[in-house]
Image (tube, rainbow, N blue to C red; front, side):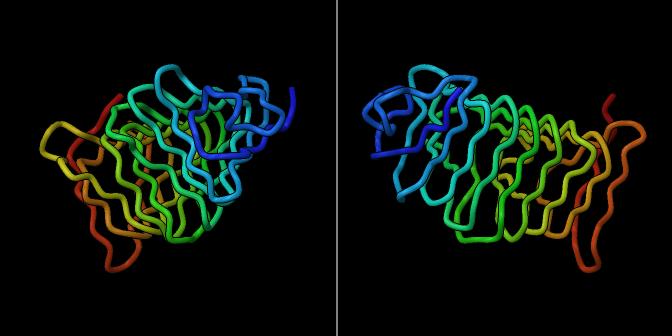
Length: 188
């Protein structure tokens, strides 16, 4: 139960990547700062909360599991490192406007998903919170391959949605003027 900040680029599971030499665990608040690149590979990364202020979280074939909230600042990025690993967020997921990418293979969010001014490229986005607010764009390079955006709750799409888009029964989709989405079916 500590706040652990990145001290160098390296593997998430390597103590030399972190201040104090301690690898973060599921009860720790993690801050990625200093422009460092931290790679989750080999074994799942865990944290209570994750704040990416200025740096890159790279997810390979394993998962990054965050028990509560994940917040990505204007200079933060989450990227795929050639694998199929997921970013799993138990609470809210928030990305502030900026130049960074968000392209994990899978993004699972238990709370509110809010992405403003960013492009999100995922194979599957599962959002279980009350709302998904996307002020940028959601893109998928292979929507024809069975990839889907699964969302439970109200969806506010402020950008373009280029994925197969599924809504749970009772959910609503709100498209802003001059925006485009493909609604292909219902789930649940």
